[in-house]
Length: 531
Image 1: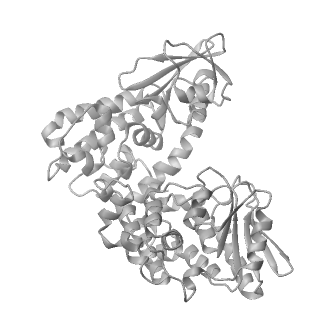
Image 2 (image 1 turned 90 degrees about the horizontal axis):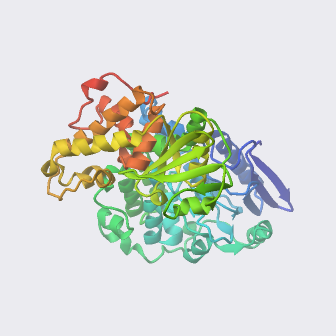
Image 3 (image 1 turned 60 degrees about the vertical axis):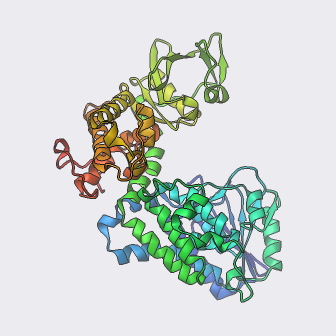
């Protein structure tokens, strides 16, 4: 096997996950194939213990990029039965691992996220390295998905319905100490003692998942399941008003409310059908493409456009006020001489920093304060200044999108003009109905809620911003549709369920938004090809 090293000593096996030429382990098709080979070997050999550990600094990060890309196009290419078979494979495999007669222990160092945590939960016991960092979680909801390898069923059975539902619905990871207190892990140890502690537990503990034992009883907080999905969302601290726009939230509620009280295998069936529903919905594809694939690629695209430079250690701050906290934390900020100078510039919509390096200059802009921003535009021309601006944005934890001039100004002005054209009365209530609250906030729009929001007005605002994005794309201000969608979603607050303004136009072109049509200016255009 190329991705899993297996060592057996006196009836106890250690399977080390270590994918070659990768910084961390992920679930690829090859990894799943080898895990299936491992499970078949355990079923045949009947060792008395198995430890699953990583050969890298972190346990496992989730799904492989190639698999994730498939999430965005599979609904166009395959029948529902094929999708069900493909994406239930790992769930079925982990159930086989869980039911072997060998005691299995996951030895967790660093991150166990998504499918990585699902693998760990399918092991009978979990030993983790003590850390204050939040490293254990199921973040799929942020991509419009749900954990499809058993996570929606195992997590509530380990930590209780309330805590499990909350973790699934908000997607935030928790640190190992909290996981121990909640029952997600069984033991904490040091990095140096991790393998030894896991081997002892494998040698001394009985095999089998707790919910497969006759005496097992569910955790006592099933009262969470007595209400409606809206009540479950509210109790978990998730916004109820915008939840209908994000099908993964409702699907997770169904998995917990319908699957948790049932036999776990029946719960797995609920999970599979719920996952299939998400795969056939455009929202998941939109969110995976923009919030994961395009977001991760944006810094690389910016570097290709402007060039690549290492961030300086020291920058000179040329402003009357203190520098942004993120800048001060990431760099040695001097007031005297330095090769790179950063100065604040007035920007009506947010924060603007002018970076000068030699005779060249570039600009970093965010909507709202830089310290609370997720993404920025880096405006300039190819050369050292713009390349350094990209590096500085990266160091500050911002997602940089390269632009020839201010694309953000164009997008915000389009939003403000569209809102003014619609009128305050027509805009009332659509902030929640279409998740336009952040766009309205940036554009300075207020609207009072009413019983039946005018969705056509909201669609008009979304389309007006999208047409402005098309103009930016056609003029080469921003080089690609994915980058524009990232800038709009993460900086402007364009609704994530759409995937961004250009993804929104693709939805209109496919007839996926009831009551809305693609504008004549874009008839026949496809901004995100399926291949």
